[in-house]
Length: 201
Image 1: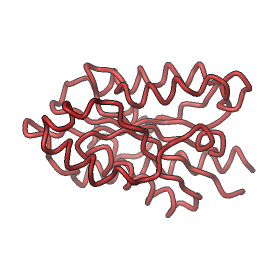
Image 2: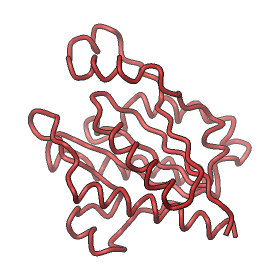
Image 3: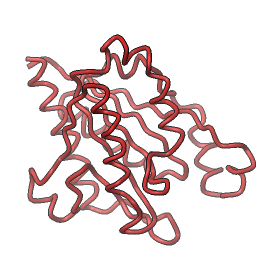
């Protein structure tokens, strides 16, 4: 099978989605993929970022990391999109990036790729599933192939999200990723890389 190309495209405000994205990139590389890890640009005004110490610290720590562009999607055979939950929906920063992909969409350059998503929220019922389902509406318009993990491995009965991978950060918004989330991230990366490789065969 041909080596798959995996793009992990994400937005993270305080670092949780960033940590999930890094784990997915590492797992994708271990599964044999060539990987691009890219964050989308921050759109929030400086005063909003400064109002939250964790947000400000994460912004400063990652401001020089590579930023996503349309070529990263066109290049990839598989794309993992990451976004925090915003009122049960995709964060505006990731949505704005996706909205710039009209020229590539019109040329059919976003179709026939493998896609899946990951998210986080402060509470267990904070809109994680609706965020991933909203993200997948876009993938249907792309003509992409949604390869959600489902319950394709027993570990999914522990992490409990068949739509992608999600994490509850808790009331202080800083709960670290646990073993269940790390295993689920590894599984999702391996699954999308494996399927993308088969499609390339």
